[in-house]
Image (cartoon, rainbow, N blue to C red; front, side):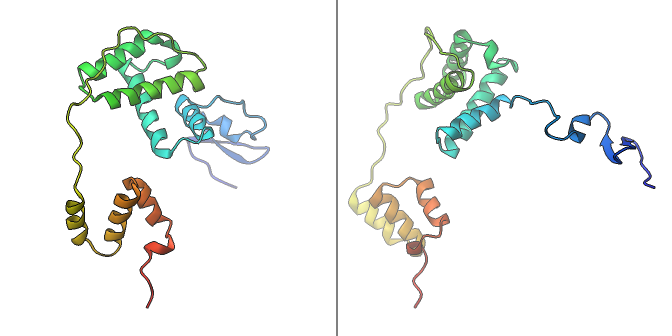
Length: 189
């Protein structure tokens, strides 16, 4: 005979140990009531079905969480254009984010409302936009690139050459290395 201690109780006909308050775990899956997935799970599923990258998925989830917590944990279905406007304005004025970051937050919220909540967002009114930066990106000359590459060896040189020559981004180049592509392995002699 099995000795049971709290917080468990036993169903004597099947001899199943059931934690108190967890009866739904003891029911077979066919008898369990179907639950609607949580909002962020729905967002992830919608993004995966549209083949968004993992990084974009993480970023959109981050912005949706910030939006929800900014409005004191209200569900986005209860909010609309005015709340989005206030959030985006707060990001530009108080958090002083860049315009591309503000656009990213807006894109995440538009995706949430369009594909998860199934509601179109109308005019956002007078959203205060973040200022675009006025500085130009620094571009290295060919001589500077050659000087940098001359100080690299092995796979570091190969990765830097690929990034420069093929225009790869850092994560794209690192994924190449992770897939153990034959040209990244040192030649066997």
